[in-house]
Amino acid sequence: MKSYIIGVDVGGTHIDAVLLKDGKVQEFLKRPYQRDMITESIQSILVQILSKLDVDEIERIQLSTTITTNTVAQKTGDKVDLILMSPGLKHDFSHLDAKIHYLDGYVNHQGEVVTEFDENALHKIEKNLAQTNNLGIIGKFSVRNSVHELKVKEYFRDKVNFITMGHKLSGKLNFKRRVETVYLNNYVYRMFLPFAREVQSTLRTLGVKTPVYILKADGGTILLDEAILKPVETIMSGPAASYMGMKALLSQSGDGILMDIGGTTTDVFFVVDGTPLFEPKGISIGSYKTLIRSIYSFSLPLGGDSKVVGNNGIYEFENRTGFAAGFGGDDPTVTDALVILGNMEAKAPEASFEAISKLDLSKNVELVALEVVGTFVENLRISIYKNIDLVNSRPRFTIKEVLENKQFEPTFIQTIGGPSLGLNPHLQNVFGLKVTSPKEYAFANALGAALSEPTAEVSIIANTRRGVVVVPEFSIERRIDRHYTLEDAIQLACDLLKIEDIDIVEASQYNMVSYFGTLEKNIRVVAQVKPRLIDEWRCD
Picture 1 (spheres, rainbow, N blue to C red):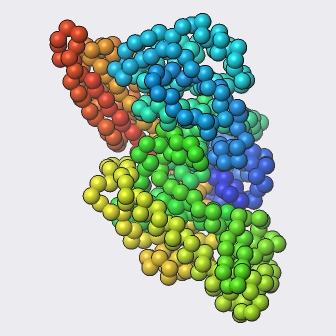
Picture 2: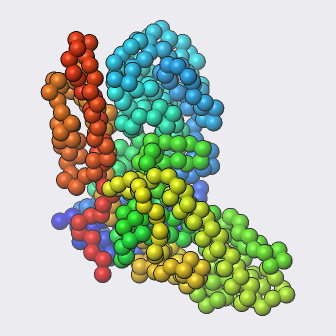
């Protein structure tokens, strides 16, 4: 009987793994890693945990990964070719590392083909491609009718290694965001593919045939084979694992701040009545704005191993350079200050004292440590409340509703991550809110990876004048008659998602007059599966 689930989370400094059996934690592993050896480190921790099991008893393996996020942040992706079919005003895509080719051909907002493209133009584009590793194809209203994208893909099918069509990544209308989503999907593909293949190879070598899933930005999972075709879905996979772990361990209701305090950064989430805020249009990463569904979060460059720099009693925090001095590092860190204050333990506490004392030789070392931690927490507070002001100034989706006429007013903080217990009393003092951590604080991220279930979103677009209903995410186009209703579209969404507990995000209909004077309907339904935990999960 298959009863084991393995969750693996890649953080900023460590890889964590957790083994579950029948919804209970059996084992937890934590291992530091080097950023240029992420894949090898994941393989190593999988080998260690799998060596103790009968592989036939493994139900599934679920991973979070920083591969795609790091590729975007470090600008190490591929050059991309994009073919755009968009009449009228041209958008500015100069920030993309892409060669853009424009192709005539126009589908209007009703999904009707207005202008066919000249197929001879495809020969010219082929000769002018910057490379043949990848190609993105995006038509302005392709989610209403994908015929042009499909024709272009068919032409380039045997000429380019990897092709992304805009209508396959999202059913939402927003041409500029769709272009940037397709761009990122192609940009990160070459980095994600070997990672995925090496994980699969490791598992085959060990005789593991169980499904492997990857965390998505919305807190759900996607099969690894599917993620290879849509690697952009795995951007912000790590923060999603953090949130799902905290969701599983959340003991309070109401509005709250959730923090994952790591060695390098702190990821922050907001919950309203225990439900996460979502990005209404899609995730943004750096200068790129996408249509990828995502839990609202932000990352602050403040972690337990942030390097502390002192200047006449003023303390600033720089990016992590290594471990805290008390754990073998060279520079003073926030962790070292917490060691001095008795909030954390270190392997070499004398090294923490020496490092912190050098920040200001004129003061008692305990006072310096207190000032360092106080400044660190105050920096967190300022940044978090700036984001709260942002949330309250414009609508943000929760799973259930748009926040209208309601201010987000947090009443509690929950923290996870290595430094969290040491920082909690200082957070409570500065924020003036109750601060707690679950007992599983050290491996909540891996737990979130293990516990997450698949999620999905579908867009149903029906036009009785054209006589079709389209579902771009499923590549469905079916004939309908003029009696098709909004209720029929909602039922189709429910049938496709195959889950009872779904949210209807949008359900709209407007009437239009046909060419023959009859009244026709344009119907749009957007439905989504909520982020959820496996039914077997039991938290003591």
